[in-house]
Image (cartoon, rainbow, N blue to C red; front, side):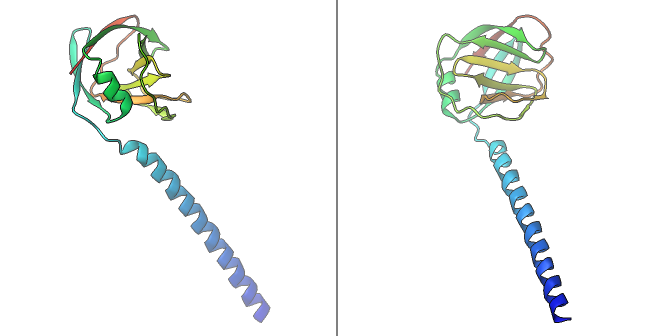
Length: 152
């Protein structure tokens, strides 16, 4: 009888240990995702897209600071994949690329060190970007080239 009680206690200890391990790892993974969501923001800038002015909430990072130092800037941005507009810059910006896993409509990101991208649809991604900021209430930018002017 004593052996059965010891075996049951060992089994319960192992089960509790396994559950604790799983919960701890789940919390660690959730915390690493929330680090990306708790980004620091700077003063907003403006972007004029085909005559419509939007406010851009920009992140406080080296990429954004370098980009803002180049403003005002005007670009003709090309269509790609039915969800983004892009332009290759004439200069390189510092990067800190990560895979965000999820692109949100309105995200402004840098692909590589010289490709500025505005996403106008949300989707999952396997690519890495450096986030610059976000445009709230962005409309579908449709097919074709758009004219974009960033200003302080």
